[in-house]
Length: 201
Image 1 (cartoon, rainbow, N blue to C red):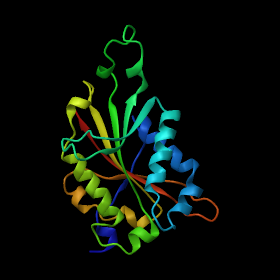
Image 2: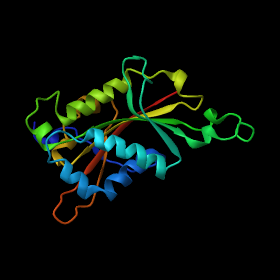
Image 3: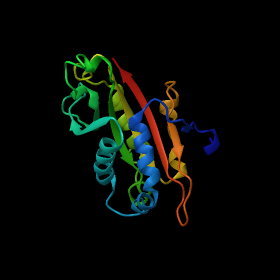
């Protein structure tokens, strides 16, 4: 099967998600620095998690908590767990905040030249994103979502166009991985933000 025949991520629009929009905005604003990170040894996922937690909290209506145990499997934690700031407002003016604001979870994976070029299929960028998707599919503790539920994203950031391929196991389920592509800058190629999500009630 040629690369063109393999199901791959499809271009997507950033709609109805302040958190996803903030992630894309951070990548777009910092793509020169991120592009440099992708070619370095040692990985850069922890750096991006911390930067996104701060940026989302500063630029969106959401407050971010890290490494929260929100899954049904309590031994697992989520990278970013986002609650709308209105949840913390005066209960007399906002008596049922959890009924109005969906919580947002993010699992994050970052592609790297050294990490992925020499890795096997399961350890590749695509394999790690799919592992996060399966982690989400296994379910979260809906007692932590409030009455409006939660949307949980698997997000990947990479500089490799070929990382858009390899999601056939996800495509077969009827759910599609989407992506956003940054415009290239001088001396850098495009960056890609991939995402998939599931809603929980």
